[in-house]
Length: 238
Image (cartoon, rainbow, N blue to C red; front, side, top):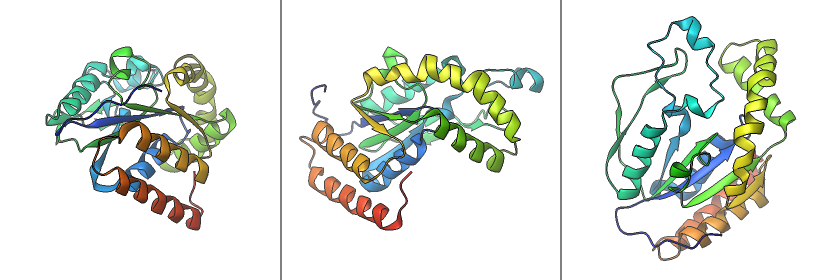
């Protein structure tokens, strides 16, 4: 475990939530934000895919979007550095249906704690070092495929055959090559499905590692405990 860095007023702590496609990154990041409340904000690496408007639709469809080079890393680094320095920044607007980026950007100001999810947040040293706490979700290939099938068929109108083909030819190989090795840089590894013990474990590690010297450490712990109890009552673990 790395040492705790005391935060100065106006700067933000950054938490990375990393795992394969279908591992539950977005769900976990959203739950952490809910637990923490108004002091937390969310970012997603999915918003930083490169603009492909210069390519024809046919060429866009041939791009391997499961490779780290599909991301605009200089833009990611700029935004995170702005957050660390307490500066206002702007976020790109990405259209997944056309693989293009809007020329307009969203003005954005970070809160004291930022939770960001993504496939490769720990892959590049220059980006990895910007995070104060790093979570890796370990999830079986069978469960990740099942979730991918459910999402892409229901939300993106794809056939089960096409989803299985993409998973076998690009998603799984890229996961093995670029996603899975990131576990070595994680501060904590949780197993999906994430249940009560996993949420408590994450909450405990975050409060111990990041919140020393922060005035709201106590109420943050209380929010975690309250949210975990709610999740337990509703049976809404991922």
